[in-house]
Length: 132
Image (cartoon, rainbow, N blue to C red; front, side, top):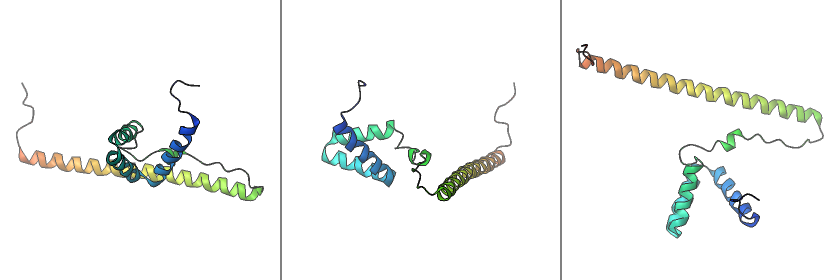
């Protein structure tokens, strides 16, 4: 048994609680942390530390989007093939959409930066770094 593992009597409920909070999003984690501080401050502090360590504080949990659930065969090969094809298509569409959003953000950032540089250039006619 690893040195830092919890007993199964504790680990099961904690994992269920984590999964329950993950299903409800970042707001549920923040509410749980605040309630932890109200009830007993070390509990709130422990939740805050866990949220930072697991990166739940700064971004949505990637666990839910990266996990693909493989259901057992239904016995109907046509349905199983259709389900697998549909899941693959949805994953591909999701990946393409995430890539599109990233490119959209980059284009917006570039446009804002270009606008800033144009405005900055209009304010001063002197070069920012004089040549020696």
